[in-house]
Image 1 (cartoon, rainbow, N blue to C red):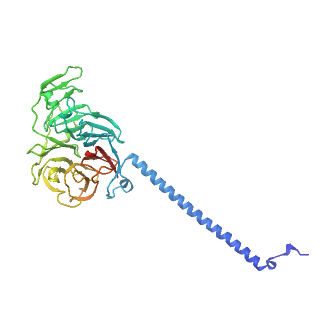
Image 2 (cartoon, helix red, strand yellow; image 1 turned 135 degrees about the horizontal axis):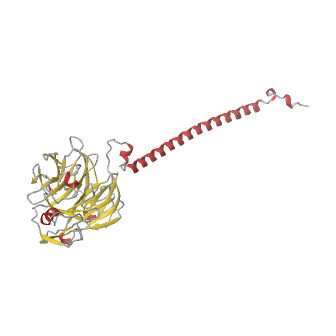
Length: 413
């Protein structure tokens, strides 16, 4: 009889002993492999947590301070690339000017089509309202460029009325700038005494009188004022709050710069700003042929789109001509520059109406350098048909008046 309790390895067949050792080795290797997989799984999970935390922080940072993605990921980095098309806002008839409210929640669009209205949209392109010059017919008005100041007032240049109409954010007429040193409220108050807040004014260059109505009083009239011979076209608010007009009066093309106290004032019944005027009509240095837009950079230098000369004219803060650029051939050359915008990085955006594109330059250094251009001719999304103006919000969104396509295109970084 065999005693199983006395069996030892010496009695185990060699092949069984080898199988046992191989099995133990497999178990050890499996355990080691499982350990390594667990470590890698933990590493992968940790990476996912880090990525999610980074994305969450970017989202939180964007909500606090909307900005293009590259500026959030690498703040201060010198990254330049063309934006991409987002969507279009329709319901406009041949738009020529576009501006944003100070908070960027309202888009103001001037139309050159049938009704010649100013349309208001929200940031998503939903219509909020419309307004126009009181007591005028469509054929008596032609709004072109539009701008807003820090208080939300809306400035609209009118080529037919030869004036700048100023409205509150909802389109109620506040005043009319009749010349670089004359407003409608100043003219009326000189003949009737100080006007009360809320006085309603009315002006039409084709009428022989102007009317006004103070709160709780009857409508009164005055003979139409003698207006200066000027023809405002482009309008912008400079970096320091100054009011910039381009003037396309025949044989006297120029740009007027009104100091920042004009846009900060709540009443223009006394209107005698220390205006500065630069330029003259012509093709030489310091001269213009149909200037469309004037903007200032962070250093106070003035950039003017010299439309029919096909170039950008640059002036120092004191009003001295410096140089021109954008002529010739190549990527940075311009055909018919119209509306312009300068962003916080001192990048100059220029609408080229004939070339059907937006040309972007770096103007932050001593020399102007071409960065990129975007757009081409067409009717599909992201294509232009005689664009005329543009502006940009704090998140980097660009709003472009695409005139002959009857839309505002929205682009983003």
